[in-house]
Image (cartoon, rainbow, N blue to C red; front, side, top):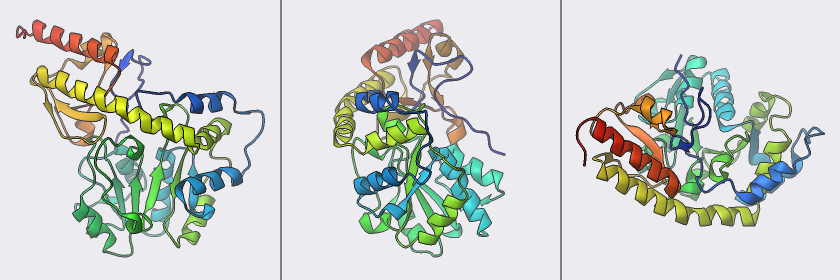
Length: 332
């Protein structure tokens, strides 16, 4: 069984300066937060989520039947994997460096990982991906979609936070894959658990099968309120406007790391994978209130993923890295 490793709070609580989570550092989105605060938790949601599904369908320009609601992106990953195992799939593929929950779900259901996308009936994409923040390969997308039958899932958790470039999938290709959306990252509200998928065209029976595998009321009142807010024009505008700050903070983060001798990989997002010139004393940083995301579980030992943060957080990281250099006897 593969381990589940995530950024964000740990046994020590919430880090004061948390670079380990990919949540939008401009958040929380004020309008979405207000909607969550005002959610009426004294009643069950509509078990069919009729209004919510219609609202999300309008946001994406699709028919409401194509909206599959989920308790979270991770829950949807588990459910999609269980559904494909139930259908007889026994192999899966992910990019070499990818979110660990894809492999964890496959491991839980006994699916075997294969090295070539064309060999797997279940394949996972993330565009832009994590941990590298880069777009998917056009060649990989073509290899996946040129072979049938195929269940391809495109994780779009970071699409709203893309700072440059565009998706490798065109509109016609997007209609052939499952699009997994988890807006809590873009809204800076990762503690509110709710997500949804947009089903491929013609997948009516598949949506029904996946809905049958879900628990009743997978999304509570607060998650429902967040997703309703996500579809509002002013919230979408806030997310778009936040990218300007994120771009500046990402540039400052990269410059700071490179000044300390770190190697930074290319990224189209506000998060970056970077390798320090010497082994990092992560425990000491954590004791100073600073948390980074070890990229070893992504298949990148010696590398760390950092999400751009506000200037005061970057100043704390800068000072802590300088202190480590001094302690190593190599001040700069």
